[in-house]
Image (cartoon, rainbow, N blue to C red; front, side):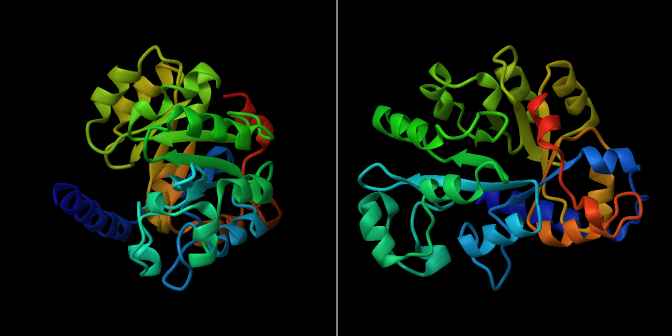
Amino acid sequence: MALLKLDQFLQTLNHVLNVLPAPPPSSEQLKQVRLVAHRGACSPNVLENTHAAFKPCLENQIWGIEFDLRWTRDDEPIVSHDSSLKRVFNQDMEITNITRLGLEKLQPLVPSLEEMVSFYGHKNHLFIELKTPPSPKQNQRLLELLKPLTPTQDYHLLSFDLDCFSLLKKQLPSSCFVAIGRTQLASLIQKIEGQGLGGMTGHFLMMTQNLRQICREQGLNIGTGFPDKKHLFYREASKPVDWIFTNRALELNRLLKGHPSIGSEKSFRANKDIDSQH
């Protein structure tokens, strides 16, 4: 209940701040920021975390896509924010209670990680959120599926729960892991200091100027969400930030295409060479 109230409060502040005009960032700032489609380019007519939401990101050259991983009964990783199909598909089925094959038959719109790597790997940067710590078997399956990709250059693994990284850190570079914070971001920075993680993300209202400076001093990439309108985006792009997570990626992409300092041919993406330097 407390988290729900916090989300509602942040959404209200988003609406208020978007009414206040903000000057556009410089052309250099706009070129450096990388846009990430949170759960794809979903809308009231496009379901989150489905190919219908991800394919427009590929077609419109959105730099990154973010999606969530859950595990089936036979330890196959599939894409779903929730532990069940109830909210998105109105099907009362817990994902851990069904095999991947059974899930494909019951709800074919749910992508697998294998499909995500095949369809979008090397094309969009993948931000993969781990919802629960993987078991040793799940850990090996995850590494197997991600093997065609280069960590940090092609994907990052995110989580609110740092325990999700424990087994994986033995086989992947620390720079491919990103900590997500909801409220206590200062405490989170202290917790991850010296671990060599690739970055930290949080709501833009929680990511203060001081915290951004600390992230820079620790060599952490900065990710913020979720500025979904022009003035909010302009404010955020003018600050120290590497990744902007948004629920309106296509709209912001069109905004950037129309900006005179970028031009339509640039779209809103960053060069992979830039990302490989972090």
